[in-house]
Amino acid sequence: MSPQPQPRPRRLPAPWRIERIPAGWTVLDASGRNLAYVYGADERSGVADDRLTLDEARRIAANIARLPELLGRGGALAAGASAG
Image (cartoon, rainbow, N blue to C red; front, side, top):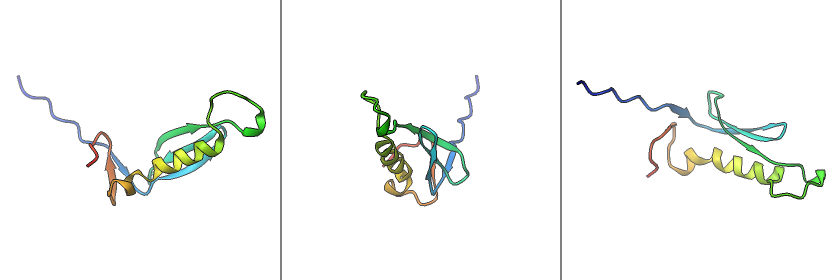
């Protein structure tokens, strides 16, 4: 029985950026691939539940977008790669 070849890790090229979407923010890599969606509610809507506000969602998305910089990866982050 021959060993299965290991799949090559996907590359997520930096820099990552955030863009506004109707209900929150999305994080995109340099090629435009959506990496994460972070949703929030408009504070003026009067909804009193545990959802994130749009500002909280923006801050979380911005921190996700900083991951390649924080992990010291200049060019790209490999999906599934361990940090450190």
